[in-house]
Length: 334
Image 1: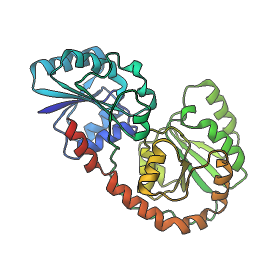
Image 2: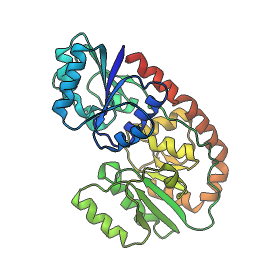
Image 3: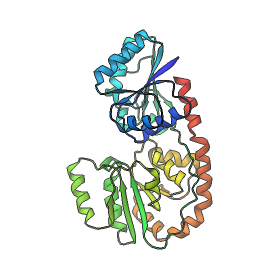
Image 4: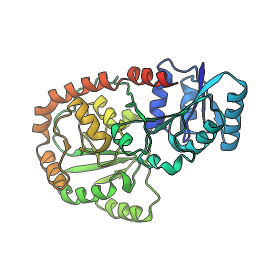
């Protein structure tokens, strides 16, 4: 029996990229609904994945209602929990159908988003043990898959400026305040910070960002779809979200052979423990800035010393976090 798959946001962030990988791995026979004129819609049209557009939520769920009532769909899968209340109401009506909701964000762990609670025909999937431990209901943990295909060697020694990439939306929840603290601690070094992501509408954050831009060591690139463009321009990834649900950026950095510096927290800490990622992700928080300063000063020596362990960690990640493993586990639910 085929399933209905719904992508609520239609962006090309981590959750949508995981869905793309899943569909391209031989699982494209489902009925897929994506927002009209979205980045995801445009991308799917280029790779010949069949999908249906929606521009109105009420019409979308009317169509899903009709699909469940008159067609041979037995399961509805929500790729991220943005539409969870609609799925909850459908599950209350179609008690003989199966509904799967993927919890990918910490804010989606709030039980208020599930007005009917944990119905018997709803399965919750969480992307990490970190998210599962913060979620009110029982769930099945399925770590996201990633196609490790670049086979890049680790970056070479750096003779001049260290180019540090900060990838993802620029928000306080993703560690912007921590970045300001770190920047003030290491800005005397020969470093550049390259931001790849949209800036939050937070007025205080925008004001702080404008102040930082005067330092001439920060470059804002906005959202950049091409990963090749991003990772070919940086020597190091900085990821300061202490509550990262899992961390696709970590996978990308591994794939492109770029070391990642961050906190041993949330999903990032989970990946680190799983693949024995060496040194660069810090257990300490209170002396984090001083540790990063030392790493940057000794960057070439560190890279030479840890190149082999980094390669071993990447091979472990390729095996454990494969798209095939992810697809098999998800298919067992759908």
